[in-house]
Image (cartoon, rainbow, N blue to C red; front, side, top):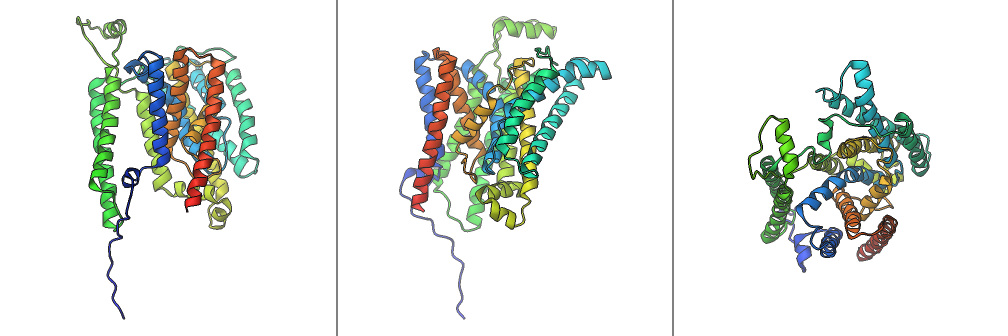
Length: 433
Protein backbone atom coordinates (compact mmCIF):
# COMPACT_ATOMS: atom_id res chain seq x y z
CA UNK A 1 0.00 0.00 0.00
CA UNK A 2 1.54 3.29 -1.05
CA UNK A 3 1.15 6.38 1.01
CA UNK A 4 0.13 9.61 -0.60
CA UNK A 5 0.76 13.00 0.86
CA UNK A 6 -1.51 15.89 0.13
CA UNK A 7 0.28 18.58 -1.77
CA UNK A 8 -0.94 22.13 -2.30
CA UNK A 9 -2.36 22.65 -5.73
CA UNK A 10 0.42 24.32 -7.72
CA UNK A 11 -0.17 27.84 -8.89
CA UNK A 12 -0.88 27.96 -12.56
CA UNK A 13 1.52 29.76 -14.77
CA UNK A 14 0.01 33.07 -15.76
CA UNK A 15 1.18 35.10 -18.66
CA UNK A 16 -0.57 38.42 -18.80
CA UNK A 17 -1.32 41.11 -16.27
CA UNK A 18 -5.08 40.49 -16.39
CA UNK A 19 -4.57 36.77 -15.81
CA UNK A 20 -2.46 37.47 -12.74
CA UNK A 21 -5.06 39.87 -11.38
CA UNK A 22 -7.76 37.29 -12.22
CA UNK A 23 -10.17 39.98 -13.37
CA UNK A 24 -13.23 39.42 -15.53
CA UNK A 25 -12.49 40.59 -19.07
CA UNK A 26 -16.13 41.61 -19.57
CA UNK A 27 -16.05 43.70 -16.40
CA UNK A 28 -12.85 45.42 -17.51
CA UNK A 29 -14.44 46.14 -20.88
CA UNK A 30 -17.49 47.68 -19.24
CA UNK A 31 -15.37 49.81 -16.93
CA UNK A 32 -13.25 50.92 -19.87
CA UNK A 33 -16.34 51.82 -21.89
CA UNK A 34 -17.75 53.76 -18.93
CA UNK A 35 -14.51 55.70 -18.46
CA UNK A 36 -14.32 56.57 -22.17
CA UNK A 37 -17.98 57.62 -22.10
CA UNK A 38 -17.44 59.92 -19.13
CA UNK A 39 -14.28 61.49 -20.57
CA UNK A 40 -15.99 62.03 -23.93
CA UNK A 41 -19.03 63.75 -22.44
CA UNK A 42 -16.81 65.79 -20.15
CA UNK A 43 -14.97 67.15 -23.19
CA UNK A 44 -18.19 67.82 -25.09
CA UNK A 45 -19.73 69.65 -22.11
CA UNK A 46 -16.65 71.76 -21.37
CA UNK A 47 -15.95 69.96 -18.11
CA UNK A 48 -19.48 70.04 -16.70
CA UNK A 49 -20.15 66.30 -16.88
CA UNK A 50 -17.59 65.24 -14.25
CA UNK A 51 -18.36 67.98 -11.74
CA UNK A 52 -19.37 66.90 -8.21
CA UNK A 53 -22.85 68.31 -8.80
CA UNK A 54 -23.50 66.26 -11.93
CA UNK A 55 -21.99 63.09 -10.44
CA UNK A 56 -24.24 63.52 -7.39
CA UNK A 57 -27.32 63.92 -9.60
CA UNK A 58 -26.21 61.00 -11.77
CA UNK A 59 -25.99 58.66 -8.80
CA UNK A 60 -29.43 59.47 -7.40
CA UNK A 61 -30.97 59.19 -10.88
CA UNK A 62 -29.40 55.74 -11.33
CA UNK A 63 -30.58 54.24 -8.04
CA UNK A 64 -34.17 53.39 -8.98
CA UNK A 65 -33.29 51.52 -12.18
CA UNK A 66 -30.25 49.88 -10.58
CA UNK A 67 -32.31 48.44 -7.72
CA UNK A 68 -34.75 46.83 -10.16
CA UNK A 69 -31.88 45.66 -12.38
CA UNK A 70 -30.52 43.50 -9.53
CA UNK A 71 -33.83 41.62 -9.47
CA UNK A 72 -34.01 41.44 -13.26
CA UNK A 73 -30.74 39.49 -13.17
CA UNK A 74 -32.48 36.63 -11.37
CA UNK A 75 -35.47 36.80 -13.72
CA UNK A 76 -33.35 36.66 -16.88
CA UNK A 77 -30.97 34.05 -15.43
CA UNK A 78 -33.95 31.69 -15.08
CA UNK A 79 -34.83 32.34 -18.76
CA UNK A 80 -37.79 34.62 -18.06
CA UNK A 81 -38.44 38.30 -18.67
CA UNK A 82 -40.43 40.95 -16.80
CA UNK A 83 -41.93 43.74 -18.89
CA UNK A 84 -44.12 45.07 -16.08
CA UNK A 85 -41.50 46.55 -13.74
CA UNK A 86 -42.10 50.19 -14.75
CA UNK A 87 -45.87 49.83 -14.49
CA UNK A 88 -45.57 47.98 -11.18
CA UNK A 89 -43.37 50.79 -9.86
CA UNK A 90 -46.09 53.26 -10.86
CA UNK A 91 -48.78 51.25 -9.06
CA UNK A 92 -46.72 50.99 -5.87
CA UNK A 93 -45.94 54.71 -6.04
CA UNK A 94 -49.63 55.53 -6.49
CA UNK A 95 -50.62 53.30 -3.58
CA UNK A 96 -48.05 54.89 -1.27
CA UNK A 97 -49.07 58.41 -2.33
CA UNK A 98 -52.75 57.71 -1.69
CA UNK A 99 -51.99 56.00 1.64
CA UNK A 100 -50.10 58.96 3.09
CA UNK A 101 -52.30 61.72 1.67
CA UNK A 102 -55.80 60.17 1.89
CA UNK A 103 -56.03 56.82 3.70
CA UNK A 104 -54.00 57.52 6.84
CA UNK A 105 -55.48 61.00 7.53
CA UNK A 106 -59.07 59.77 7.02
CA UNK A 107 -58.90 56.34 8.68
CA UNK A 108 -56.29 56.75 11.43
CA UNK A 109 -56.02 60.50 11.73
CA UNK A 110 -52.34 60.39 10.86
CA UNK A 111 -51.41 63.39 8.76
CA UNK A 112 -48.24 64.13 6.85
CA UNK A 113 -45.04 64.24 8.91
CA UNK A 114 -46.46 62.00 11.63
CA UNK A 115 -43.68 59.64 12.86
CA UNK A 116 -45.67 56.57 11.82
CA UNK A 117 -46.79 57.82 8.41
CA UNK A 118 -43.68 56.94 6.43
CA UNK A 119 -43.33 53.54 8.15
CA UNK A 120 -46.89 52.46 7.33
CA UNK A 121 -46.60 53.89 3.81
CA UNK A 122 -43.40 52.02 2.96
CA UNK A 123 -44.67 48.80 4.54
CA UNK A 124 -47.89 48.94 2.49
CA UNK A 125 -46.00 49.70 -0.71
CA UNK A 126 -43.52 46.85 -0.25
CA UNK A 127 -46.32 44.42 0.60
CA UNK A 128 -48.36 45.37 -2.48
CA UNK A 129 -45.35 45.06 -4.75
CA UNK A 130 -44.40 41.66 -3.37
CA UNK A 131 -47.95 40.30 -3.67
CA UNK A 132 -48.34 41.50 -7.26
CA UNK A 133 -44.96 40.03 -8.17
CA UNK A 134 -45.86 36.72 -6.53
CA UNK A 135 -49.19 36.65 -8.39
CA UNK A 136 -47.44 37.12 -11.71
CA UNK A 137 -44.91 34.46 -10.74
CA UNK A 138 -47.75 32.07 -9.88
CA UNK A 139 -49.24 32.54 -13.33
CA UNK A 140 -45.86 31.87 -14.93
CA UNK A 141 -44.85 28.97 -12.71
CA UNK A 142 -48.08 27.12 -11.99
CA UNK A 143 -50.33 28.13 -14.89
CA UNK A 144 -47.35 27.84 -17.28
CA UNK A 145 -48.25 31.06 -19.08
CA UNK A 146 -45.10 32.49 -20.70
CA UNK A 147 -43.55 35.27 -18.64
CA UNK A 148 -43.48 37.50 -21.71
CA UNK A 149 -47.27 37.35 -21.97
CA UNK A 150 -47.96 37.63 -18.23
CA UNK A 151 -45.73 40.65 -17.76
CA UNK A 152 -46.83 42.27 -21.02
CA UNK A 153 -50.36 42.07 -19.63
CA UNK A 154 -49.04 43.45 -16.36
CA UNK A 155 -47.42 46.30 -18.25
CA UNK A 156 -50.88 47.34 -19.48
CA UNK A 157 -52.82 46.51 -16.32
CA UNK A 158 -50.68 48.06 -13.58
CA UNK A 159 -49.94 51.28 -15.43
CA UNK A 160 -53.66 51.94 -15.72
CA UNK A 161 -54.38 50.76 -12.18
CA UNK A 162 -51.99 53.48 -11.04
CA UNK A 163 -53.89 55.99 -13.16
CA UNK A 164 -57.27 55.03 -11.66
CA UNK A 165 -55.95 55.07 -8.10
CA UNK A 166 -55.01 58.73 -8.49
CA UNK A 167 -57.71 59.75 -11.02
CA UNK A 168 -54.86 60.70 -13.33
CA UNK A 169 -53.69 63.46 -11.00
CA UNK A 170 -50.30 64.28 -9.55
CA UNK A 171 -50.30 63.51 -5.81
CA UNK A 172 -48.29 65.70 -3.47
CA UNK A 173 -46.82 66.98 -1.26
CA UNK A 174 -45.57 63.81 0.40
CA UNK A 175 -44.40 63.11 3.94
CA UNK A 176 -41.14 64.93 4.73
CA UNK A 177 -39.52 61.86 6.28
CA UNK A 178 -40.56 59.79 3.26
CA UNK A 179 -38.73 62.30 1.03
CA UNK A 180 -35.46 61.49 2.81
CA UNK A 181 -35.18 58.36 0.65
CA UNK A 182 -35.07 60.39 -2.57
CA UNK A 183 -31.71 62.15 -2.76
CA UNK A 184 -31.01 65.79 -1.97
CA UNK A 185 -33.60 65.79 0.83
CA UNK A 186 -31.78 62.96 2.59
CA UNK A 187 -27.99 62.83 2.80
CA UNK A 188 -25.52 61.86 5.52
CA UNK A 189 -23.41 65.00 5.47
CA UNK A 190 -19.65 65.08 5.03
CA UNK A 191 -18.50 63.75 8.40
CA UNK A 192 -20.80 60.75 8.54
CA UNK A 193 -20.13 60.05 4.86
CA UNK A 194 -16.39 59.81 5.55
CA UNK A 195 -17.09 57.47 8.46
CA UNK A 196 -19.26 55.23 6.26
CA UNK A 197 -16.63 55.30 3.50
CA UNK A 198 -13.84 54.29 5.86
CA UNK A 199 -15.93 51.48 7.38
CA UNK A 200 -16.91 50.25 3.90
CA UNK A 201 -13.25 50.28 2.82
CA UNK A 202 -12.17 48.31 5.88
CA UNK A 203 -14.93 45.74 5.37
CA UNK A 204 -14.10 45.36 1.67
CA UNK A 205 -10.40 44.85 2.37
CA UNK A 206 -11.20 42.42 5.20
CA UNK A 207 -13.41 40.40 2.83
CA UNK A 208 -10.60 40.35 0.26
CA UNK A 209 -8.10 39.15 2.87
CA UNK A 210 -10.53 36.56 4.22
CA UNK A 211 -11.07 35.17 0.72
CA UNK A 212 -7.32 34.85 0.21
CA UNK A 213 -6.86 33.07 3.54
CA UNK A 214 -9.71 30.68 2.75
CA UNK A 215 -8.12 29.75 -0.59
CA UNK A 216 -4.76 29.20 1.03
CA UNK A 217 -6.35 27.09 3.76
CA UNK A 218 -7.84 24.75 1.17
CA UNK A 219 -4.70 24.60 -0.94
CA UNK A 220 -6.09 26.57 -3.87
CA UNK A 221 -3.86 28.87 -5.94
CA UNK A 222 -3.98 32.54 -5.00
CA UNK A 223 -3.00 35.75 -6.71
CA UNK A 224 0.51 37.12 -6.22
CA UNK A 225 0.84 39.48 -3.28
CA UNK A 226 1.39 42.46 -5.57
CA UNK A 227 -1.81 41.64 -7.47
CA UNK A 228 -3.79 41.53 -4.23
CA UNK A 229 -2.25 44.87 -3.27
CA UNK A 230 -3.26 46.43 -6.60
CA UNK A 231 -6.85 45.22 -6.22
CA UNK A 232 -7.01 46.35 -2.58
CA UNK A 233 -5.65 49.77 -3.50
CA UNK A 234 -8.15 50.10 -6.35
CA UNK A 235 -11.04 49.25 -4.02
CA UNK A 236 -9.91 51.76 -1.39
CA UNK A 237 -9.36 54.54 -3.93
CA UNK A 238 -12.74 53.88 -5.58
CA UNK A 239 -14.73 53.96 -2.34
CA UNK A 240 -12.99 56.92 -0.72
CA UNK A 241 -12.76 58.81 -4.02
CA UNK A 242 -16.51 58.41 -4.54
CA UNK A 243 -17.18 59.76 -1.04
CA UNK A 244 -14.80 62.68 -1.61
CA UNK A 245 -16.58 63.65 -4.83
CA UNK A 246 -20.03 63.60 -3.22
CA UNK A 247 -18.75 65.55 -0.23
CA UNK A 248 -17.36 68.17 -2.62
CA UNK A 249 -20.88 69.00 -3.85
CA UNK A 250 -21.87 71.91 -1.63
CA UNK A 251 -25.37 72.78 -0.49
CA UNK A 252 -26.37 76.10 -2.14
CA UNK A 253 -26.07 79.02 0.28
CA UNK A 254 -29.74 79.99 0.01
CA UNK A 255 -30.95 76.49 0.71
CA UNK A 256 -28.53 76.07 3.58
CA UNK A 257 -29.76 79.35 5.07
CA UNK A 258 -33.39 78.19 4.84
CA UNK A 259 -32.47 74.84 6.43
CA UNK A 260 -30.76 76.55 9.37
CA UNK A 261 -33.58 79.04 9.80
CA UNK A 262 -36.07 76.16 9.92
CA UNK A 263 -34.06 74.82 12.86
CA UNK A 264 -34.04 78.21 14.57
CA UNK A 265 -30.35 78.84 13.84
CA UNK A 266 -28.51 81.69 12.17
CA UNK A 267 -26.21 80.83 9.30
CA UNK A 268 -22.62 81.99 9.96
CA UNK A 269 -20.99 84.08 7.27
CA UNK A 270 -19.05 82.00 4.73
CA UNK A 271 -20.33 78.62 6.00
CA UNK A 272 -19.84 75.84 3.46
CA UNK A 273 -21.51 72.42 3.89
CA UNK A 274 -21.39 69.42 1.53
CA UNK A 275 -24.22 67.02 0.83
CA UNK A 276 -22.35 63.75 1.31
CA UNK A 277 -23.77 60.30 0.58
CA UNK A 278 -27.48 60.21 -0.31
CA UNK A 279 -29.66 57.79 1.65
CA UNK A 280 -30.90 56.36 -1.67
CA UNK A 281 -27.35 55.35 -2.61
CA UNK A 282 -27.00 53.55 0.72
CA UNK A 283 -30.25 51.69 -0.06
CA UNK A 284 -28.78 50.62 -3.41
CA UNK A 285 -25.55 49.47 -1.77
CA UNK A 286 -27.48 47.48 0.85
CA UNK A 287 -29.63 45.94 -1.90
CA UNK A 288 -26.55 45.00 -3.91
CA UNK A 289 -24.92 43.35 -0.90
CA UNK A 290 -28.04 41.36 -0.01
CA UNK A 291 -28.66 40.27 -3.59
CA UNK A 292 -25.02 39.24 -4.01
CA UNK A 293 -25.21 37.15 -0.84
CA UNK A 294 -28.41 35.52 -2.10
CA UNK A 295 -26.76 34.76 -5.44
CA UNK A 296 -23.52 33.36 -4.06
CA UNK A 297 -24.12 32.09 -0.56
CA UNK A 298 -27.69 30.75 -0.33
CA UNK A 299 -29.59 27.72 -1.52
CA UNK A 300 -32.03 29.99 -3.35
CA UNK A 301 -29.19 31.48 -5.37
CA UNK A 302 -27.79 28.07 -6.27
CA UNK A 303 -31.25 26.93 -7.36
CA UNK A 304 -31.71 30.05 -9.50
CA UNK A 305 -28.49 29.58 -11.44
CA UNK A 306 -28.92 25.82 -11.68
CA UNK A 307 -32.41 26.27 -13.11
CA UNK A 308 -31.20 28.86 -15.58
CA UNK A 309 -28.35 26.64 -16.71
CA UNK A 310 -30.55 23.60 -17.34
CA UNK A 311 -34.23 23.77 -16.28
CA UNK A 312 -34.95 20.10 -17.03
CA UNK A 313 -31.96 18.84 -15.06
CA UNK A 314 -32.83 21.17 -12.17
CA UNK A 315 -36.38 19.82 -11.99
CA UNK A 316 -35.16 16.21 -12.18
CA UNK A 317 -32.73 16.90 -9.35
CA UNK A 318 -35.61 17.83 -7.05
CA UNK A 319 -35.77 21.62 -7.37
CA UNK A 320 -39.33 22.92 -7.25
CA UNK A 321 -38.94 25.18 -10.27
CA UNK A 322 -42.55 26.36 -10.11
CA UNK A 323 -42.28 27.64 -6.56
CA UNK A 324 -38.85 29.06 -7.42
CA UNK A 325 -40.46 31.11 -10.18
CA UNK A 326 -42.98 32.53 -7.71
CA UNK A 327 -40.17 33.50 -5.33
CA UNK A 328 -38.17 35.21 -8.08
CA UNK A 329 -41.09 37.30 -9.31
CA UNK A 330 -42.12 38.11 -5.73
CA UNK A 331 -38.59 39.38 -5.11
CA UNK A 332 -38.81 41.38 -8.33
CA UNK A 333 -42.08 42.92 -7.13
CA UNK A 334 -40.51 43.82 -3.79
CA UNK A 335 -37.62 45.56 -5.54
CA UNK A 336 -40.06 47.43 -7.80
CA UNK A 337 -41.82 48.75 -4.69
CA UNK A 338 -38.48 49.72 -3.14
CA UNK A 339 -37.61 51.57 -6.35
CA UNK A 340 -40.99 53.29 -6.17
CA UNK A 341 -40.07 54.63 -2.72
CA UNK A 342 -36.82 56.07 -4.07
CA UNK A 343 -38.31 57.40 -7.33
CA UNK A 344 -41.36 59.14 -5.82
CA UNK A 345 -39.28 60.52 -2.94
CA UNK A 346 -36.76 61.96 -5.42
CA UNK A 347 -39.56 63.66 -7.37
CA UNK A 348 -41.28 64.71 -4.09
CA UNK A 349 -44.65 63.62 -5.54
CA UNK A 350 -46.37 60.87 -7.51
CA UNK A 351 -46.93 61.56 -11.19
CA UNK A 352 -48.66 59.53 -13.89
CA UNK A 353 -45.53 59.13 -15.97
CA UNK A 354 -43.33 57.80 -13.17
CA UNK A 355 -41.50 54.65 -14.23
CA UNK A 356 -42.27 55.16 -17.93
CA UNK A 357 -39.89 53.05 -20.06
CA UNK A 358 -38.17 51.78 -16.91
CA UNK A 359 -38.81 48.21 -18.03
CA UNK A 360 -36.58 48.80 -21.06
CA UNK A 361 -33.91 50.55 -19.00
CA UNK A 362 -33.88 47.77 -16.42
CA UNK A 363 -33.62 44.98 -18.99
CA UNK A 364 -30.95 46.92 -20.87
CA UNK A 365 -28.96 47.47 -17.66
CA UNK A 366 -29.01 43.75 -16.84
CA UNK A 367 -28.05 42.71 -20.38
CA UNK A 368 -25.34 45.34 -20.78
CA UNK A 369 -24.08 44.21 -17.39
CA UNK A 370 -23.44 40.73 -18.77
CA UNK A 371 -26.59 38.79 -17.89
CA UNK A 372 -27.08 36.11 -20.54
CA UNK A 373 -30.50 36.12 -22.21
CA UNK A 374 -30.05 32.37 -22.71
CA UNK A 375 -30.02 31.99 -18.92
CA UNK A 376 -27.61 30.63 -16.37
CA UNK A 377 -25.25 33.58 -15.98
CA UNK A 378 -25.42 37.09 -14.56
CA UNK A 379 -23.91 39.29 -11.86
CA UNK A 380 -25.38 41.89 -9.54
CA UNK A 381 -22.46 44.29 -9.82
CA UNK A 382 -22.62 44.01 -13.62
CA UNK A 383 -26.29 45.04 -13.65
CA UNK A 384 -25.58 48.07 -11.44
CA UNK A 385 -22.69 49.10 -13.67
CA UNK A 386 -24.96 48.62 -16.68
CA UNK A 387 -27.57 50.91 -15.10
CA UNK A 388 -24.88 53.53 -14.45
CA UNK A 389 -23.69 53.33 -18.06
CA UNK A 390 -27.26 53.72 -19.34
CA UNK A 391 -27.96 56.73 -17.11
CA UNK A 392 -24.61 58.32 -17.96
CA UNK A 393 -25.35 57.92 -21.65
CA UNK A 394 -28.77 59.56 -21.35
CA UNK A 395 -27.62 62.33 -19.02
CA UNK A 396 -24.60 63.09 -21.17
CA UNK A 397 -26.68 63.31 -24.34
CA UNK A 398 -29.16 65.59 -22.56
CA UNK A 399 -26.35 67.90 -21.44
CA UNK A 400 -24.93 68.01 -24.96
CA UNK A 401 -28.39 68.92 -26.30
CA UNK A 402 -29.35 65.74 -28.12
CA UNK A 403 -33.09 65.50 -28.79
CA UNK A 404 -35.05 62.93 -26.75
CA UNK A 405 -36.05 60.79 -29.78
CA UNK A 406 -32.42 60.47 -30.85
CA UNK A 407 -31.44 59.60 -27.27
CA UNK A 408 -33.78 56.60 -27.43
CA UNK A 409 -32.33 55.63 -30.80
CA UNK A 410 -28.83 55.63 -29.33
CA UNK A 411 -29.91 53.65 -26.24
CA UNK A 412 -31.63 51.04 -28.43
CA UNK A 413 -28.56 50.76 -30.63
CA UNK A 414 -26.29 50.33 -27.61
CA UNK A 415 -28.56 47.58 -26.26
CA UNK A 416 -28.45 45.60 -29.51
CA UNK A 417 -24.70 46.12 -29.80
CA UNK A 418 -24.19 44.92 -26.21
CA UNK A 419 -26.11 41.71 -26.88
CA UNK A 420 -24.16 41.12 -30.10
CA UNK A 421 -20.83 41.64 -28.32
CA UNK A 422 -21.96 39.29 -25.55
CA UNK A 423 -22.79 36.59 -28.13
CA UNK A 424 -19.37 36.96 -29.77
CA UNK A 425 -17.64 36.85 -26.39
CA UNK A 426 -19.41 33.68 -25.30
CA UNK A 427 -18.67 31.99 -28.61
CA UNK A 428 -15.00 32.87 -28.23
CA UNK A 429 -14.89 31.60 -24.65
CA UNK A 430 -16.75 28.42 -25.67
CA UNK A 431 -14.28 27.79 -28.46
CA UNK A 432 -11.39 27.87 -25.96
CA UNK A 433 -12.97 25.29 -23.66
